[in-house]
Image 1 (cartoon, chains in turn blue, green):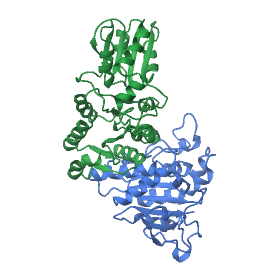
Image 2 (tube, one colour):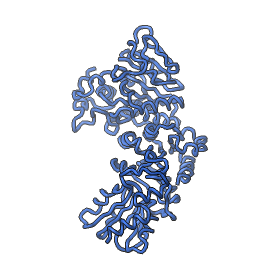
Image 3 (tube, one colour):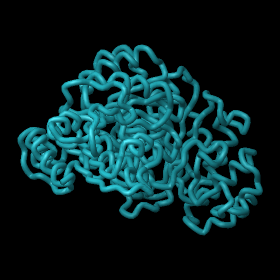
Image 4 (cartoon, one colour):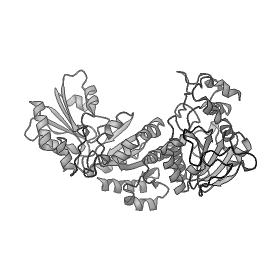
Length: 238
Length: 289
């Protein structure tokens, strides 16, 4: 994507910048009900980027979809630029939350989904994107447990590029490929399955789980379009 | 004050569909009826204070007006970064209502005490801090907070004054005389008793943030004593700024930093920190000599 390489200043967190690109594109191109004209509509779908690190792909997608001018991409992190190395919702149209410190997006997503439901926006969906290493932050686990307990239908996407220092319980057991690439695994049993990415789903007990190839747009779309009566985890392996 | 908070907040939830309440087990049972009536706006997240603040931030992002509540050390100290980022950095607000104050939970020990809550909020922008001195001051503060989206902290305590002074957002003069003594919230009665027979002016406020700096400048004529029910000197920087350019001496009394590793009740801790009438009288007399 040409716009991505235009984000010149992203010297920080480079691997994380590109890991999110495909998921972000599918979200904004094929899933989210939001346009530059509806960034303030109370019933718009919400996408919260919890993993604020490496936002080059996020900015590139926002520019490609017309939320921000493409010219903004040339000076990321500059004094006069609204685009920082972590996104700020106050400065950037279409950005729902300001992040950077890890472990804040999921709790904000739970509150957002509750607020939307309380106001009767029952068709509005709330998505939140996290990194796999971000799951080390304990605050996530407060939100994971509560969302499961109240069966709150939010969708969390975890980009898995095996960046967590100590991995997860169950450990990485091979990238999903071929026939099991889009398998549903139950978060309830927490049984690691051969060939599946067990490490991340077991951290989401009682969530509905899909593990997808984080570069396959059709797989990503199918997983994100599933509407459930409980929280959903989509692990996008890249 | 806790009962007033529960009754008032229950009523606010009935009256205003924009309001929501988030608790983390503390006081949850007292809101059972409210939860039953408004299951979509009253939440108990369990013992998860970081989440409580995050949920508050998320609710506010959708236009709701969240009230959050727990013991002060769990509401403020533990969730400080969530308060900083999930509210302030997002430019959203919430109404944080704490109980426990500096040492109401004297027998529970230091884990349940938050002498530093107001100082912590002083590191952040845009917080209004209410420290009511009487239960009858609480309802109006809570109701006023429902009508806007700013960040508000209401610090409730077991210790309270004999009489309510509802119009005490600014400095309210209760005794006229010489040097000014400012009493914040429940420090009023001990200050009034400590200064009996002394030639001082006593002014009261239940809203130390924003501090009534105009009132301070109008009332100070050389000497000022500030008595606060949280860390001593918490307001020193604001008093200094307010009196910038005016020759003055200042004494800041409050809770000491050193941990008091004793139990008892709040009266024992007030005495240990010199915030009982006798202790205050000693400090104020020595300063004004």
